[in-house]
Length: 245
Image (cartoon, rainbow, N blue to C red; front, side, top):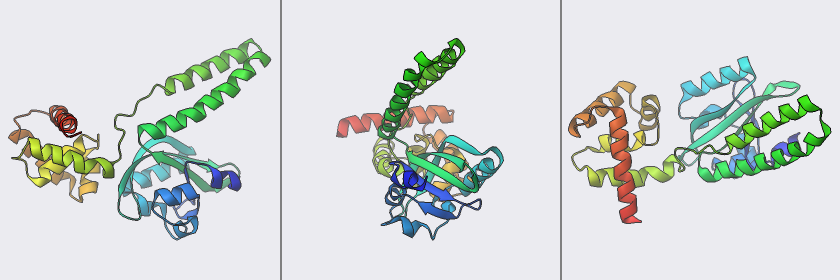
């Protein structure tokens, strides 16, 4: 089991029920900016999570429900870069004091990589069909349909926060020069589909401060809702990127 864990190409971290890191594979160490797996063992998994409240809630979910899947989280690497990931978690069979966290960067390329593994799984499953009775074949057909549908999912954003934010800030600043730097930052972050709570954590502001700034932006741009603002800012970022590409 441990040799498979170390060799898997996606990031893997073993933690205890208090989120202390027991072991990490090389993919996770490199992804989070460490030189080796051993360096990570002195840390707690919460050290890398931006929204600590959400992380503690997810750990509780694992302890109560044995795991979770497809959860979007913002992580901060050793060098301070903020990265958006998709995370899975589960108890290791017969070792319930250990929890496996598996995660990968939230972008289209990572999703396509996962799809290749889904393709391999489907190929193996389809080979089983001829050896099953009618009921078994019916169950397998439903499984195949489910996995084929999952491959059609598209991530709303394909870039990570640390790669996109500078470019988006330039776009918003150039298009709306009347906005302050704080207003520009919040406008750009809204287009990453972050909640008010997540924005407050990223910018180290209170939730109420973010709400007040958001209201001020709507007033300045003569908009009536958050959705209108997101649409407006997304369009300006798209136009700016096209003109400067």
